[in-house]
Length: 248
View 1 (cartoon, rainbow, N blue to C red):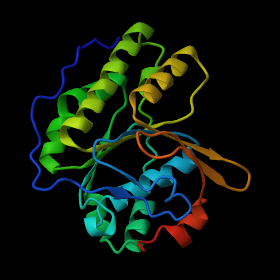
View 2 (cartoon, one colour):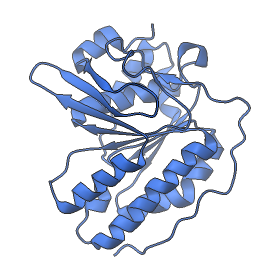
View 3 (cartoon, one colour):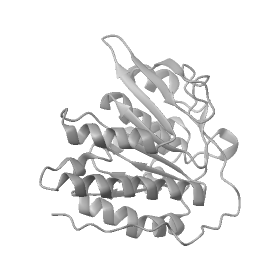
């Protein structure tokens, strides 16, 4: 059983020499729908994993390009709960963006968790220190609810702590003016999964859905504080690598 721990908001302010710029995606088919992530954004990407994974890989690389080219010139904290991170795809994309592949991988601070308890501890006890240590301006948390779907954890306890984690992450984005992007992947259609997904979609201020059809993929901006909502084509992996995943 996971021991419940009431969370407190972070108490240390991160000093930045310069306010971080926006993170652009540079995918022509969706740029008009969703031009960029901004400091203070707390986003969830949900839907088809084969569409979401290339998207987060792109974010890991573009975060590192210079600000004048639409990046953040920053390291990334990557909390990997789904164990699908592919280094070779990151290095391939880094080369296309004119970055050193070895340095690109080194700038992705990867953390792996295997239980809800470990994820909770990582986020509430260590994440803010890691942000300060690396001056990271973006955090990616993959499949954020995965470990909380463990039926061995009491459902009431799960819901309480999961909501506290979401509140804590939201406070981090505002306090440090960073970007936090989570993914919520498909799971069995249980009552617990429904509640956790609903909580995630409610707490985040940006919701993006990925769907895959027989011939293409689509991205839908479901929730955003300023941009107009809508749907755009999302390039397939083959098209993306050859035509879009370059730094124009």
